[in-house]
Image (cartoon, rainbow, N blue to C red; front, side):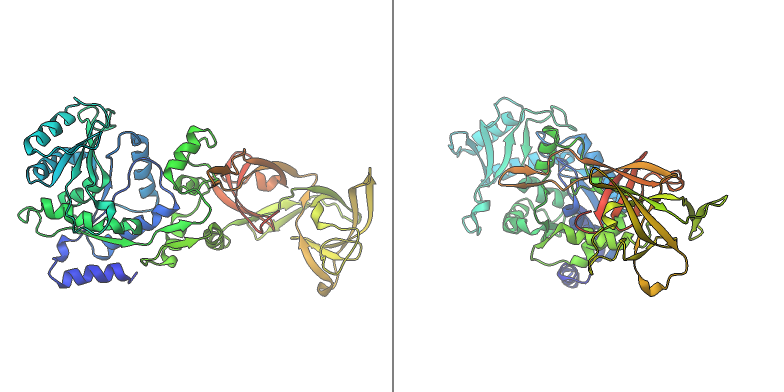
Length: 501
């Protein structure tokens, strides 16, 4: 990954930054679970730490007690480890509440911060500002009665950072500090100062924080003490990974859970890491996908199909192929020769049974032959997968629906006359199993789509296959798609072989 970020860091080293002072951090807010979009930020921070052989902290940016809790903390830690990354230590912004508070007091004393009432009135006197700030901390006022704002320079370039809020009152129990605090720092105030406290050398952020960088630098310049940390942290922005038409907002994930549209964050209709674990995706494949999309200053917008196609192309080589039938129709093999052991050995790995009556899929047979149809008909020879060629010669109907197809087996037919191979399952040795099918949830015009229950479809596979299935393992259903055997007698769809099946 020789990109602009590495070049900028090397440039800083060449200007005098000691290489042993390099330190990075990944700083998620514990107000939701991680999803595909987060992997880019995770990868780049941990990669840089490995590239420069430096430390990296996992810092939980827990400044909002209204939306953060220990569940999300544990979930983030667990998924960072699942991706294969190790950090130097775990820290919490809440560890620094006391330091941040004292820094803010010094800002007030230096005329760089002031109290504002809920009516928009500014408190000018420094002693009064300190008085109100103290009693805000002690819980003497109601939520929104006062805020502490930074008195930023007029020279700062954009309105995003004009007198931004540093502290707000929240009478809410914090999952770590309990009721010790009644004021909580905003992201803009806590973010950079926590970097400074931890002596982070480079703070990697997604591109939407580019407008906040002047404020990031302004705050640090106002609390800077070269005796504590000679080098000021530097913010560097990189492009986000946006997945078109898919829910990626933690706020919406939480909303879906509250509305009971999903039962948990591993719902297969989401692109959360929990969902990917449920589907038994290899985390290395996810990270490799992030790598091939590169790192620039320009946001990357991709279709979900691109990600799924990449994962599918990686697992196709390692998944066991199973013949499965969705819409069964009976085929009678007229000249079938019954022996004591009608089994077929597949690649010396497993066995399946063949019998006089088998199931094939209804889509694999047509009465009216045409030149674009190469599967079973009265004119086409087709090969049964792992067996001989057959051709239909008669059908049986009930209420105008085909119920049986009669075929002959051809053991010595010229290969050039066989245009297609179809899957089948022995009627005598069939075993029903179930597939959980779904479409990804998305939001358009504030309306949630695909929010109905996940569909369950019945399939048939060979008993010998069924009793050798391994839980949490992925399988390929021939010509149908890829599935994860996620619980007894139940498969979860991963990808269709084609758009519809």
